[in-house]
Each structure stands twice: as structure tokens, then as C-alpha cells.
Amino acid sequence: MLALEIRDLRKIYSNNVEALKGVSLKVREGDFFALLGPNGAGKTTLIGIVTSLVNKTSGSVQIFGHDLDSQKSFAKSLIGLVPQEFNLAIFEKVENILLQQAGYYGISRSLAKQRAEKYLKKLDLWEKRESQVRELSSGMKRRLMFARAMMHEPKLLILDEPTAGVDLEIRRSMWSFIQGINREGVTIILTTHYLEEAENLCRNVAIIDHGEIIANTSVSDLLSTLQTESFVLFLAQPCAELPVIDDLVLRKIDDKTLEIDLKKTHSMNYVFEHLSANNIVVNSMRNKVNRLEEMFMLLTKNGRS
Amino acid sequence: MNAQNWIAYWTITEREIRRFLRIWGQSLVPSAITTSLYFIVFGGLIGNRIGSLHGFSYAQYITPGLVMLAVITNSYTNVSTSFYLSKFIRNIEEVLVSPATSTVILLGYITGGVIRGLLIGAVVILISLFFTHIVIAHFFIMLLVIVLSSALFSIFGFINALYADNFDQISIIPTFVLTPLTYLGGIFYSIEMLPSHWQIVSHFNPVLYMVNTFRYGMLGQSDVNVVGSIIVLSLVAVLSFCLAWILLEKGVGIRT
Ligand SMILES: Nc1ncnc2c1ncn2[C@@H]1O[C@H](COP(=O)(O)OP(=O)(O)O)[C@@H](O)[C@H]1O
Ligand SMILES: [Mg+2]
Image (cartoon, rainbow over all chains, first blue to last red; front, side, top):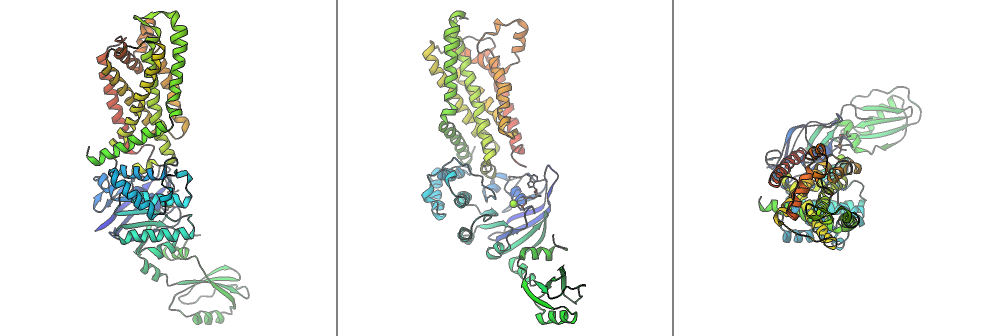
């Protein structure tokens, strides 16, 4: 069963920005799926269309086989959303936010009360149930948005950059909360621009860039294609010309700095032999750390500046 | 409506009611104060010199109009402010993501506006008791006219809030359209007192019909045809509801 099936989804905003250029995507039931991409790639737009916050230009969306256009109410009842930006009624009491949310989904008052208690306790907000939302810290507000999304116990939970701007400790506890929900059978889709987040949490991943899906695979496959590692080499003397070495991609950063992409099948010795043969003396080297950027280099032809 | 829709409808309605009760100082008190002032100035001081109109004291004569004035402005403001605030804070997204249908959302907001209309209507009538003697000729017509008028202006307020991009845009219509229409809608005078061409112009003012049918419900006197007015009022309310429904369904002003 597919939790989500998107076909040829396009979105052109009124200012003529083409945010989605024909995106197709399948997410299986029970999956933990990452939609990974840099800022402005179109993640929030895609989530917005799936959650009825953005009008699509064309294409179709199905939630567990129910079309979002023709079976709107039912399809919507299966989705929970934790949005990227706070959208809580700041003067409302914490518990009321949850009870109202349940009400919008047609859940009876008594069941709503039970669930509110369950999720407030799970998310460590029980003591704050009588507080106004505006009195909460931003970490608490985010947890409240998690609790809110769980009130109707959706089969598909969508998290739009759930941990952006959240400190490490809270991020860890959110991760384990989400993992717990996934273990109970809920399909999770999260968007992120941190590769680490996708790597630590997710089973499958789609990479979106400039409104297009440029990779859609399992996280482990993706990481193994990343077996190329990049290093920065600092040279003893300026090198006038880049040496050409078989199978190696060398880039000149400046006169005394080179960057090299090295496949795991190559040994370091191989590299240094060739560099020595070209009279290049390496003083020191370091790993290039930004792996997401590296991945984009790999997946898009020329990388991005 | 099925059970799920009823719960969603009642959730929105209850939230709307709690909102205006919580801010009663801004929502209910101002109308009570202005009404009292009208009674003191027009009913008492000036009214005594006017004498009677259609057999009623001036204070009695203006009571139905003052009720309608409060009902109309309160319903309109309730829905336009509440809905626009939800857009502004973005918690309207909760409802937009949920399976609550456009009909449910719209009915919830309208009921909130109507209940505020009924409540403020009762407040104004209570205040009028301090200044004049109240008779009630046709209670159900009074009730019907308040419900219809406040529903209609709730819908107008909703449409206004859909299109509004800032707070100014939800006070423009009340200031430049609503206030003139109500003041020229026969609250303080019988249109028989106007020159004939102004009488004709007045008949294009929808508020005239509301004020007069309500005056009929209260005092048994009207400048217009009561049954015809109620039918037209109902039709306009249904048409405006359909318009608001289409706008909401399309996501005008709320979905990019
Ligand atoms: N409401 C909007 N109106 C016009 N353009 C928008 C709107 N929202 C997003 N965009 C544009 O669409 C593109 C994708 O944005 P978004 O979906 O927010 O990306 P992401 O969530 O991946 O950062 C960006 O170029 C952004 O500027
Ligand atoms: Mg985003």
C-alpha cells in the first residue's frame, strides 16, 4: 500500500516562480521518508499541496489510495502536519489548542480529553496545559505542534523541517518521539536540509532541488553512492597547472589549495604518487565536511556555487 | 451533516463565542455605551421636542433601529476580525488542513456572528428599558430579522476578511459603507419625512428593510412591505452564503 502517491505535481506561484516542475513521488505505508533539499527547493510547497494549504497548478495526490480532489475530507483525515513555522493561536490555552484540533476532526470531547492528556504527557507539556501558548518557549511550542498533529492519530505524519532552529538536546528527544510513532506503524515524511537528519532517522529519501526530484532511493544506497570522499590539499608551492590524473577529479581552489574527489577504490598512495610525479608537494590535508553539498555536487552536474 | 461535521461545526462555533465573551470589554461594552448615549441625547433631550412619530414617542421609535445598528456592526466585526486574525496568526491552517468542509467552517463563523448579534440585541433592548417603554408586537419576526440580518452581515464580514491583506482593510468597509448605510437606513427617522426623491433612493438601501421589518416586529409599524422584505433578505443571505462558500473553496486570500 502506498501512503502517498504524487503524480506530475506542478506549482507556479502568482509571481511566476515555478516551485515544482512535475514532481512524482511514492511513499510506502510504514516508511520513514526524508524529503531532502536546500532552502527554496520546493519542500514546503510540496507539503503545502499535500496538506491542502497550497493550491496546485496541476498533477494529482493520493493518500492511501484516496484522491485529494475527489475524496477530500477522507484523505485529509489521514494526514497530520507539523508545519515549518509556528501557526498556533497565541492567546489560547495549551490544552484548548489540542481539544479544538480534535474537534475539527470530528473527535468526541471525551476521546479528545484522553488523547490530549496522553500527548501532553508524552511531550512533556502536561504541566503547561493551563498556560497560554505565548508563554511557552519555542521548543515547547514545537512540541505542542507535534501533539496537535497527533490528536486524530493520523496514518501519515508530515513534518516540515521539524528540528530547524531547535537545540541538539531537544532535537534528540524529538527524533526518538518520531521514531516511536513510526514503530507504531505511522508513515512519516519529514523534510530537512540536514543530511545527518535523513541519515539518522530515515529509510528512504528523495532529494529535491529547484522543484525537481533528482534522486529517490534508500538512504543506505544513497550513502554508498557517496563513497567518494573529498579532501582539501594545501600545497607547499603554488601549482601553475592542474595535473590530469586518470579517474581523479581535481579542482583548483586557489594557487596553493586543491580539492580532490577520491573513490574508496583508490588508495591514498595512488594519489600521492601521481601528485609527486607532477612535482606537487602537499603540506597538509583535511576532509571536506559539508556532505550535503558534496551530494549535490555528485547529483547535479556542476554542483552549485 | 454527519456526527463528525457536527462536532467540527460546534467546535468552531464554541471557539467563536468564547472569543467574543473573553474580550467582552471590546466586543459588548462599546455598543452598550453608544446605545445609552443615543437614548440620552436623541431619545431624551432632542426626542422630547420631536413629539410622536406614527403614534410612538421618539425614544420608542428609534429603539428598533438602535438594536439593528448594534446587531449589524457587531456581527460584521465579529466575523471579519476573528477570521482575519486567524489568517494573520496563521492558525486558520489548522482548519484548512483538517477535514472540516467549507460549509462547516462558514456555518461555524456565521453562527458565532449571529449569537453575538442576538446577545448585543438583547443588551440594547435591556438598556432601552431604562429610557422608554418597550412593546413587543411580533416576537418571532423580531427574532427572525435579527438572525437573518446578523447572518447576512457575518457573511459580508467573512468575505471582507478573505480579501483583506492588512488590518486597515477590515475597517474600511465598516467605516465607509456600513456606517453610512445604517445611519441613512431609517434608524432615526421615518422615510416619509424625506423628500420623495430621497425616499426612492432610500429604497436601494438594504438596511432600511432590516430596520423597518424589525420595527414592525417590535412596534407593529413599518415603512416597507414586511413579508417581501423578509423574503428578499433571505434570498440575499443564501446568495451571499454561496458566494462566500465558493471563495472559501477556491481558497481566495487563504491558499497561495
Ligand atoms: N507564497 C509564495 N509566493 C511566491 N513564491 C513562493 C511562495 N512560497 C514559496 N515560494 C517560492 O517557491 C520556491 C520554493 O519554496 P519552498 O517550497 O518554501 O522551499 P523550501 O521549503 O524547500 O525551502 C522558492 O523559490 C520560494 O521563494
Ligand atoms: Mg520550507
